[in-house]
Image 1 (cartoon, rainbow, N blue to C red):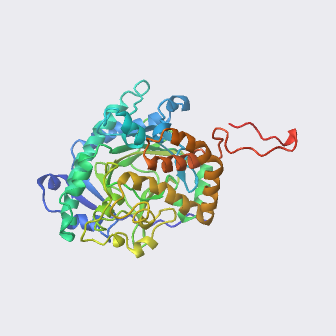
Image 2: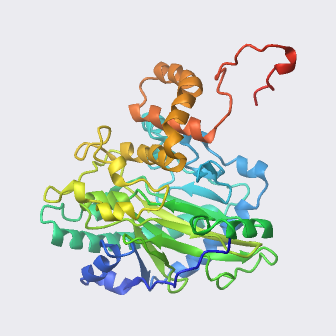
Length: 455
């Protein structure tokens, strides 16, 4: 099968940083980008220090990713579900471990946002753990990471202010300044330095033969961000034959970020220049605005050329775990995601209705911490299809819950949602692994039939 046809590059809305600082009214531009008919993405130009900070940080992502597995393993943190430090192959893409990229996660604003409070760390490790830095092997990473991250957040607060003004125009009962308040007072912002590994020629050929759905998710599969506002530094490409000098542009014009519009159109989007910061709306803002702001599914297409890697940086500005996920009183929460938009979602992207406005996450009582555990469960069913319930139920009853429940009950001061989160993590990240003595082995008929020793 030939590679899928690539759509034309789509022009995106660009805001000038000077206009944001001056407080000029940019609500029309924001609605064009983030409203129902928009693509859920815009760019900001003219941030003086951004280009230098990007050029300093992004090459470090490639350098760390190319350290030995032994060294990288020193900076993994399983107890936060790999939400701090290095993570590679711990997430799933289309039902399989995602080995296409590696990530270094940390909070870009606070090294220890909750002063290592043991109660908070026990219940909310994936949000609140102190940062982890490779001070011995790449000491310059911390300063570069925090510097770029803080700049992107400060610009994000200005974008949020314009979003708040737009929502207030459509919803008089909307809390004035809610998005800006939510992300600027939150101490759980998370930044992710991503390195997309180069593919071999055989992998490129295989990807080209699998059609559109696979082609447009070769580096990062279709998803919605479920925070409030995401800032993106334009990616930096490297030819691995000459890795010391970053490429000035992608060697494959089809590689990069794609979005799926609410009309089902596939659109390639990119920053007009490398010194622009991109911003995307997340599902939390879609909920808080009652659908005035709309998140858009997006994916990253891998370079159709062997030996090319890509590094990028994303900052996820999200609510604290106890922020209530509720629409304004004058907006119908049922309409936060229109049925037509839901039908246009790519396979594997669960609609809001499966995670919000449910018995476990009611419209007016669900908080962000609970909502944050739902995407993994919903994505499992979308990825695995009609057999998902039977497959997961069997795994939970025979392997995961017998191992997990005694430990959970022994430490029952943990938040209830941590049980759901841990069960899903164990089921997916350690798929097929022996957990303690579970699953129990059936009696063997003869020595020749004995199973191999557990790993």
